[in-house]
Length: 107
Ligand code: FES
Image (cartoon, rainbow, N blue to C red):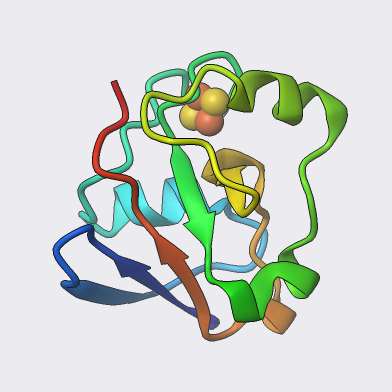
C-alpha cells in the first residue's frame, strides 16, 4: 500500500496508508486527516480539496486537466504553480511516499 504524507500548515505531518485507485482526497478523509474538506465528494465542483504538491513529486503527479485547472481558480487559499485538487489525484504504486502540503484554509 502506498504511503501518503500530508503536511499541515504548522509543519505537523501525518503519514497514512492509501489504497491504489482511491483519490488523495478520499484517503485523507478516510484516515482522519483534517485540512481537506472535500465537500462535493470528488465531483470537481467545490475546490475544497486543494493541496500543494511537494516539488519533488510534481513530475509523477502531473498537472491538472483543463476542468480541474478551471476549478483551481476558485480555491480559498493562494493558488500556486503546484496547486492541485486532491480528488483528482488517483493513488497508484508509483506515488508511494507522496508528500502533499495542506493549504491554510479550504473556504
Ligand atoms: Fe470537490 Fe475535489 S472534492 S472538487
